[in-house]
Image: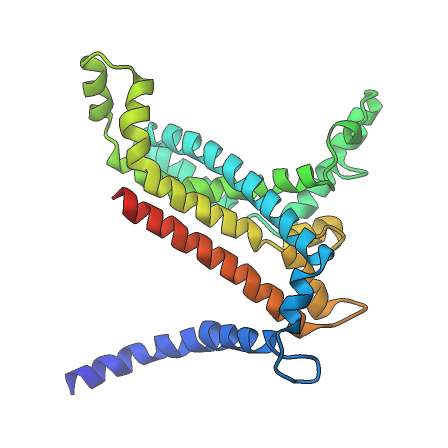
Length: 274
């Protein structure tokens, strides 16, 4: 009777998980093996793996995601340590602001960058009046532009993930190492970084996955012209010319498999270090 009561209490949670996660995921996997006529087939995967266009979308997504994740992680580690070194009140205030900025992404972020650095952006017009062509130095609609915009929302998320890990490194450890004659650089190389390594690899994996799945920012900035996987999935579902939801499902399964594999590798690496 007691176990039945517990099951009844947690059953709404499992119903919600099934309705919003499990059933849609199984539906996507099932549809990825269906043709437009409803026949079971693997032609969707064959078409993706044999298409230069779709392979290029994976390549572009991997490059942008890796670059933005690495840059975001480096800046996040430095910023997290700086915030950790502040007093408690200022540290909490900074984290609150960071938490707010971590939600500034998608269409509003792309629109903000276009207002500042777009074809008729504020800084573009300002520098043009000073005789400087901004687009000859930096094109917001290019690969580099997307990386910079991605880094903008990667850094706050990285800080929120990395900041708690610095609790495992006490200032007393650093002072003890310095008093024994070693340098701070040597301490971080031999002690600090190994302690932070599980958090570093996990944060890198999350930032990479966050960038791989980003859709609204890239679509709003380039109007779907930039060839990355989320944009291709969106075009196949709601495009103006050809709608191929089953092919979009296959792309989604491949993308999910890549991210799941990355997560498993990250977890295995962290367990091995422990």
